[in-house]
Image 1: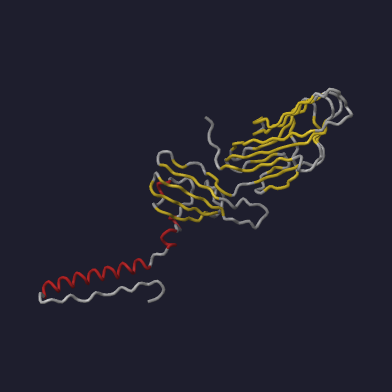
Image 2: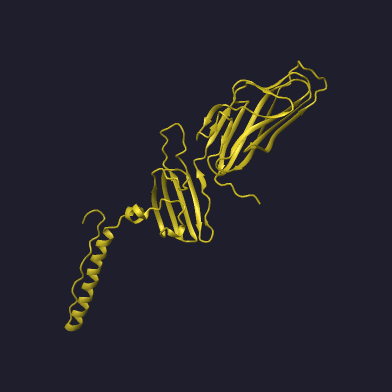
Length: 297
């Protein structure tokens, strides 16, 4: 007996003076033994891989295919060949957990290839199938991105205008989603993004009104900081520098973009600037915190 192989023992023959009944009983036992031996040979040919792994025509490569087409049980499929049918990335693999057409969840796993400079191949997503409503959106559950951008040099603040803060220095950009040329973060997928931003302003002891806002697709989404000052002894030479800092959650869809804008209103003719301080003071920080952008009420 090798490995975990189980030895099947043949029963002893049944003997009695009633030969007719003895022969009938022994034939029945022989049939049961033959069936057991045949079943053992069939089971020996089944492995975990052949039972759970879908290959060839059985592997559903199109993400739009109905959930009703999937087999019941736990199955695995490879997703490759630069797949663009709707999976979260173009290369990975899928685990299907299907109890019925009303109890079905599908998990997608990136390849985890981190040989390059960015980490967009690492992550886990899931979606659900319900006959009648179909597939849900993909919901990211691991591998969230983080981007931290600073500034270079001073930026002139034009009086009485909203203007984009020129964040242009990458400190961290885990998934390569920040557009330095246009000073904006481009959302790689639907989800919730936590935005922290701040700037340090070179100003003076004169009336001033400063606002810092998050813009979504070119429109103001939320004001995250507001400072108004009116010194009792106005001066265009005495410094009164200050910082504007704030944060907000932003629900967004794939392809949406986020920017930071600032309004500068002030008295006097001396120009105001966003300082050239380090990333401790001037920063645009984005963290992906949720895997779906749910609809508004």
